[in-house]
Image (cartoon, rainbow, N blue to C red; front, side, top):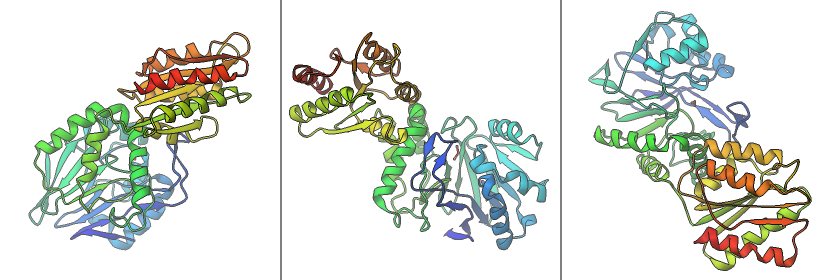
Length: 394
Ligand code: FEO
């Protein structure tokens, strides 16, 4: 079933209330998601993106109820990742000669995934496609937002920016528009999406936002490929991205740890206590890495000005959950944040040094203070947490 967006532009995507994992199991999707595809019906009929293969049959059947597929003049593929291109092979079996407009890199990703040589028409930033009735689509390459093949498309006259993954959220919203969605969940999911998918490319995001601003486009609607369509104050999400891309932080410190026999838990709680004692206005959050969703913790790290990471020593190393978490932390390339390490040990005690090295490699400014405690912490050991808190707050 289509949903009208504006004039002759309709949403023809799929709202996936059941989805709980994305990118395999690497991204949690607690509020579902959507794959947004769009149909533009001017003198030319244009399909902007498709949806994920598991819902491909549903997508094609819906589309057939709205139009004769043979009436589609152009297909715009803004990004080759299969959540947007998965239904393309089934569609192309029905209309095999229909021209596909995409970036040169998207030809590579589509051919690499589907091994088909469709009627590709390569576009680059500034190229436009006349779709009749005085309207055209102007293309803007969005390289590394978040793949090398990504692009956005701007529909003139209606002033709609189809932004693909950029400005999206994994968030199922039947009402479709930002002014109708639950505002708390929208803010949370938009930030989680940025922190966990786009943050590594923040310097490119800043440059791309400047480039988009330089195009002086009137933007009435931003229509991403996941989650809400921004029609109420649509550029608010561009302003948020500008802030998030600029080494974003709030007055927050996040403590993430895992424990074997609760000694490292005591250290985490002691650091949290002293941060609050020394700086009551600073928000402190404490998470057990093994018990908390990693994407949610990373969103809290994204908001933080400093973090503390803890693990006991086991087999001359940190706990395996912490190793994996540190690897993910490094890949997200956070900037301008301090970090401290802590942990208990019984025998060899390497965990704190390993964490400090890992935090430095992940781009954090590791403070001088740490908390490395033999066996269970005494009251005197716990009081040393004040030095770690102080160092993180300075
Ligand atoms: Fe990069 Fe929504 O796919």
